[in-house]
Length: 105
Image (cartoon, rainbow, N blue to C red; front, side, top):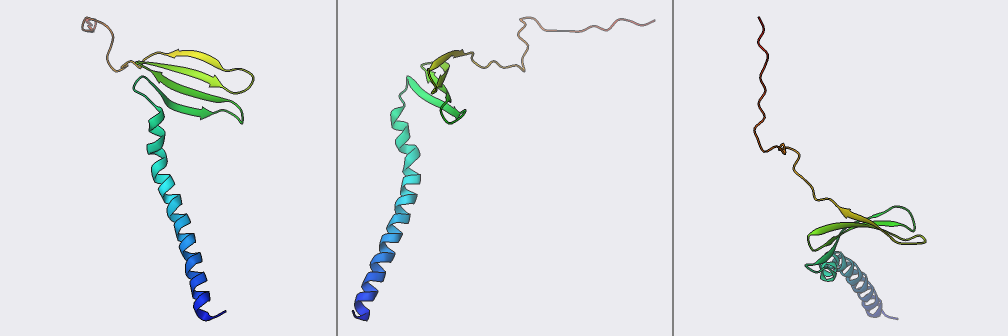
């Protein structure tokens, strides 16, 4: 074996290692963009939370409603529709609220 063949082997090894690292960065970059393809305008997964090694709690969107399901374990459960968020900063009365202080004498 000559010095030239050792240099070729080392360059090939470094090239393969560099390609593996570049592939890792490409996968990290492309993974969120490829995942969006599975969601449509009508149905999509909003968030998912792992409760333990088997069970998962998932919040999903179906048209304009939001639902909650529990998957894994022995059975899957639909826990119900989540009420839409309301703005709690505004009072829900239709008339202005005014307070009058009693007069002190």
